Length: 208
Image 1 (cartoon, rainbow, N blue to C red):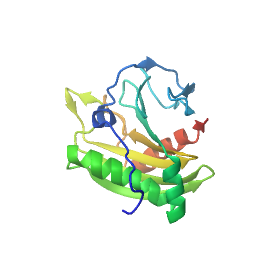
Image 2 (cartoon, one colour; image 1 turned 45 degrees about the vertical axis):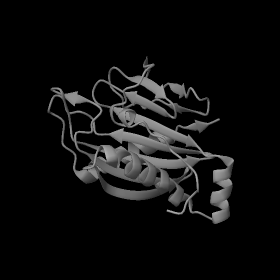
Image 3 (tube, one colour; image 1 turned 135 degrees about the vertical axis):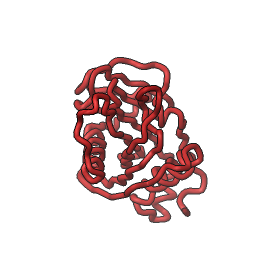
Image 4 (cartoon, helix red, strand yellow; image 1 turned 45 degrees about the horizontal axis):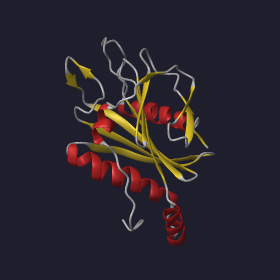
């Protein structure tokens, strides 16, 4: 990909999968949360369950609950050189999103650690926030939760969007069916649910 000469997007893989980082804080559904970077704020999703908590690392915010609920926001502030170069080259906005989500995250960061991970589908979407790149992944034993000491095979959505000078990657995953009584969604239903939840969170992001 001919994108920008020197741009790096650093993901800490252990955080991307397990969301294990320091500084966990209990949070309430529906409250407005401001990133420690001061770059943006967003609304904590209302579909989280008991034990909702948030943790931050450099360039990333993870939100978990006790029932396998997960939202993760990875964000990268584009340099002025990046912006000017991409405009000069007339690089399509979607190609920039694919560079970060497919190229940097999936191909360079996830696959070396989890070679059996797969991209199930990719889609594009547009609303008043901008253009979205939507990617559904299958992660063998890639859940952020464990059941009987084991991680589950999981589907995860990664939805990317650029808002002003920041590229956001929003992660959501299937919730744990701990009691075994929840209806199993079809792949199409699950894809729609995960994408919808990620897009809803993006709708609450306010870049400062």
